[in-house]
Image (cartoon, rainbow, N blue to C red; front, side, top):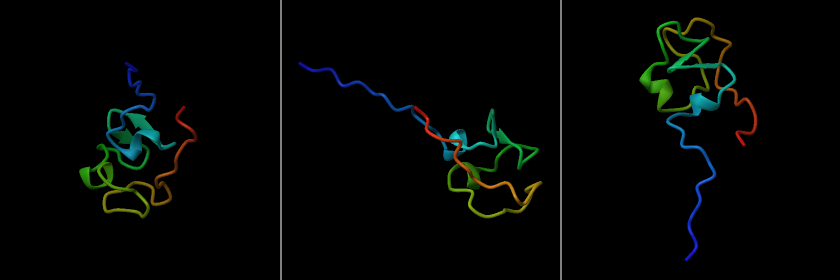
Length: 64
């Protein structure tokens, strides 16, 4: 019997692979943490409360 091997990491949010993500649900765009609406979606346009309107989701490259 072959055992299935999971090779891809389990991500809670696309934020985790963004170049601006600093960990603990924080990034350079939000001083008080990433809002749930951004964490659960795609940050492709500035949102209310964002510090720097130029900081949007930008993948940092291959995750493997």
